[in-house]
Length: 203
Image 1 (cartoon, rainbow, N blue to C red):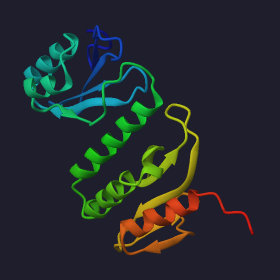
Image 2: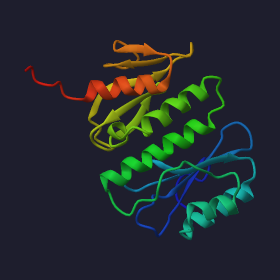
Image 3: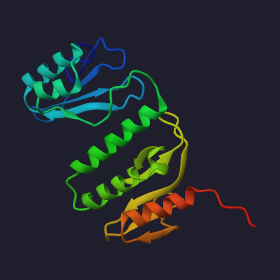
């Protein structure tokens, strides 16, 4: 292990596509958190929190030994996979699909009252090939898109939101539904797709 032994540690892994596993001790209370990231994006593959230091050691050993993400989760049940793939290289298509899978899993696990609407919006956008081909990311729980992957995002419109009143917004900018409010996620996604389509020339 490396790092400040009082508050954190890092556990190396021989797999070239993984960064070191980060382990942090909470300042108040007997509790630890872990985060294992991808070497290409520095995005979390696994994370978790526990008050069982023995379980932290189990997860650290499994990461160090290069075990699969699912095997790490089975060995240390507090570990939560984020849904992202372990990528063997910086392939844009695979990175885009990986991030979609992360957003879909994240949306399915959110405990908030508005989570079902947000989850339906994510699923509706993923089902549309014109949006699924773009790299997805979120800001203030708004679904946005980029023509490039991290770390150099190139945002492209529009932006989709699931609102607390049950409507779904579409806008050119962040959190400004200037393209309309809709009663279903499918309608919002369809409006977003139309916005991305080039205008037909006048005849």
